[in-house]
Image (cartoon, rainbow, N blue to C red; front, side, top):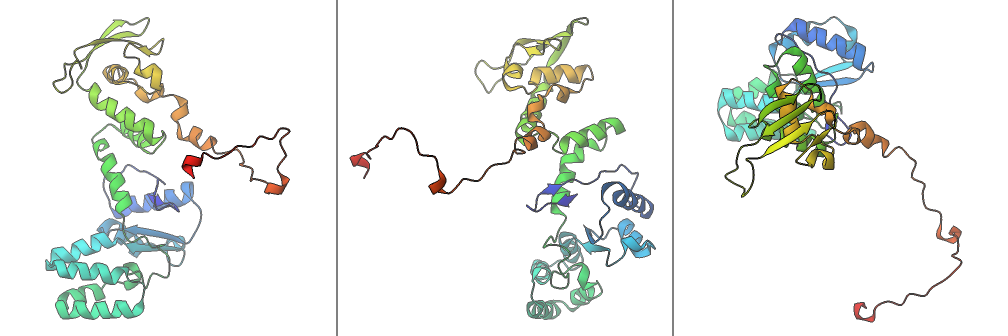
Length: 309
């Protein structure tokens, strides 16, 4: 995962491996630089996991060594390690402060404070290359990004996919990667949760016709306990939501889940991220100077409402 100019998630590459070891990290990095990007001056931020650490320490590939590629440490993981080893909230806060300051004077003063609070913690930090975890010694490679929090958040999104079959896992990751606009996919996910409680019956194989029974709702008066007719051939559902919103309703999703169809195939192309981008492709012409505006053929004087003056 990377970040864009708005400090938002920018997915680069996903890989499925057995475990995080030196060999798999080497394969991942080789694929990343071969198929995804060919630029140098990369800054890779990660925890100090033995697999990735041993790979960067032992690699002989010049393009993965400074100054072409730099491997920096995530501050959250470092602070967590300090807290685990020395169990001090005050010390943890000092480490965060010393790592994020951008002035040498403040860095040295805070390091002195850490030495006074806990000499062992000070020695622990001194053994770690300062260019890898402090902003003041980073020389601008991080662009101010000190943690892997955005990646960890996305890992949480993909957590449910780890036990799925490979093909399903790839599809899950692909559609979670914002192929669809956020509004549409939020609606889709909400409907997906509802669909888990429905009972589906196939009425006609030839015409792809199904009925979906919903359970009664204890929260909403009159909600649930209905039977809806879903036609994949006509692309209709009796609830009317699929036709109105062009987003798969919960009844359609239940049918797809029952018979191993991909419900996202019934999402209207309007909600595709590509369509969203295309909306902004036309050039927005700037306004001409007021003196160049065309004079209207008819002029009408509009007097302001005196009560609003």
